[in-house]
Length: 458
Image (tube, rainbow, N blue to C red; front, side):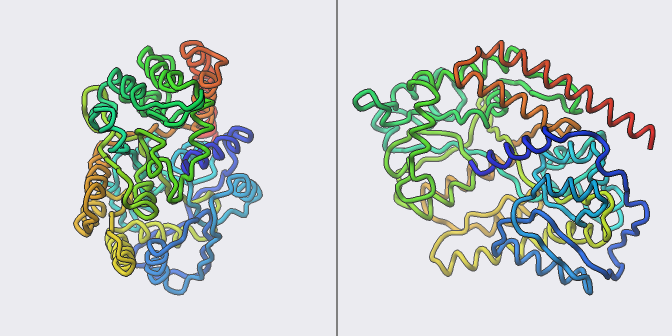
């Protein structure tokens, strides 16, 4: 839910002001060296959600920076503010952006490639989750250092499943006919109004998940070719929308799910108002905190071959073109994402959870080595929460992401507009995705051509 809002915001800003070449400066004068003593100032923009996991790593990063004076503007990255600062030649030294924004920012020259930073500070890019590092790699160059990973798992109300004589395998996505049947069995109405949502396919945000589960990559690995009108993508959208149609339509389902106490003890699972849905793993902690006795059941989301699958997202550190202190920015990014830093942060979270009498459910960091280490620190919360954690880590080993492209924002906007037009009843899936394909491919072709021309002129 929160991730979707962030993505939508990013699409709006970049689509309304997207042209290659906002920056223009590079970091050719920077001297990256992990042993160098650094001085000056470091300004960081967009690092929100500061908690013990963040502050533990921030303290380590500040220590590694020595005499550098650090200022962090908390709160989510304001893209318009950042791009305006970049255009006037006064950008921050470091930004914390959504990974699906990195390609567009790189193409317009707002951030610099990080090969020299990575080599100088000794950052091992092989330790990052593959889908995460791929999402910040444009045209063979890395533009961001990944941090955190968000994945989905299947969450279900075990009591409602039992009452309908259903199993978790009926709602894990491995058999779409079974999910559709389960949806109808779980759905309930009272006086013509929806009273129990059977299954929520979580459109529009999870359309890439269902397309991939049906064997379709909506964007080619090199970020150049859209594949939105693939027959498998059309089939995926038709099925995911049919889940809502069987419950009276997307409008009814959305209105009902939006009325739930999503973050409170009256959430839809605790009050038996939802049968099952795929959802980001962070919601497990919410449920465990506010409704620990809710009748939950968890497993991974499955593709149509029965294999675990997850559509990953997250953030990344990037150095703006024209940054005054790129050396300090690079070191900050290295320390914030290092295995030792993540271990210290996990210990801080573990200590806090033990003080509260709650289990430590782990962290998905974007760093595969750190993830494996932290997994060994997880404490038991009993069932079904231990299975929830196990499902999260299994999902994290089977992730994919939309590849980076210079038209990240335009592609996602075309895709979501198509899905929304179907959900609203304005278009059929095949027609909506055909139009989206044309829009997205033109945006990709234009952006790649403009970026390549800019590179030739540079």
